[in-house]
Image 1 (cartoon, rainbow, N blue to C red):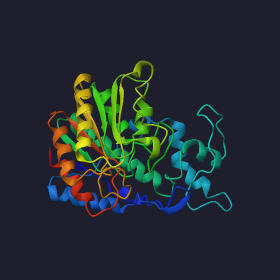
Image 2: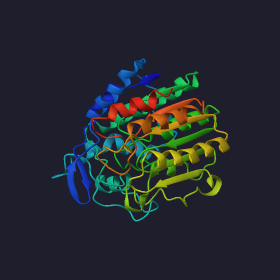
Image 3: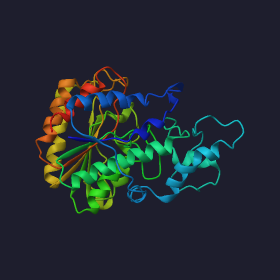
Length: 337
């Protein structure tokens, strides 16, 4: 399997993470890359750097106002006397239809849903490289590769069209799916991250051309809290094109695989011909977020079940945080192809 990776993704090094009111070091660190590369190298496939396909494929998902914000906010933030070293919001609108301020502080609150997506000097460069990684992986699949792995970091599935959150700034899986749709493919996004892919759901919620499926820890007591409930089925033209399979905390291999079977059945009914796999590895029993209890052999079975579909597949990295087995879990999934 080809792996696509851009070293510029190492540039983003967030320091701040607010959890339950306590400031902590951010777990979405550049060192995640080295652990994931370890798994890739053990598989022995080729690794390529993506070309720059420009901003147009990103603009197909994210509006110009948001992209301008991401590219300029750090410089603007530094002009504020006494401002934090990273851009961190402290005020938010009540609704997305509220007024759009000119203030850097106001725009940060408008475009950042929480404090776990701080923006530093190199965040845009890394997020742009992460998106280009997913774009090139998509093009390789369109060119005939059976499956391609995009080592995309920072991740993307908590990012809405104009709203960063949960370590995510550009929605790589959505960008990949949009590019596939433009090429005439019938697309589904299958998200197996520990956390619900709320941004991905939001982007496609009123559309019928992309089926979105997320298997995740139930949000009633777990991030992202406000999205990911089973009754969220889509709206308007998208009604019935969103499937949330929410699991009880502590669910292990068998429960996760049972939910996966339901997701794969939905893919078949949808007549999906090309898949975007939003690959989170944080459902692992030893992941720092400790929500589910999938084992390394369980990840191998997850990969095998998805690979058996025989669909052209763009595999886009989402979560999965530092623990000794992170690279092993990636290897376990990718070995199925």
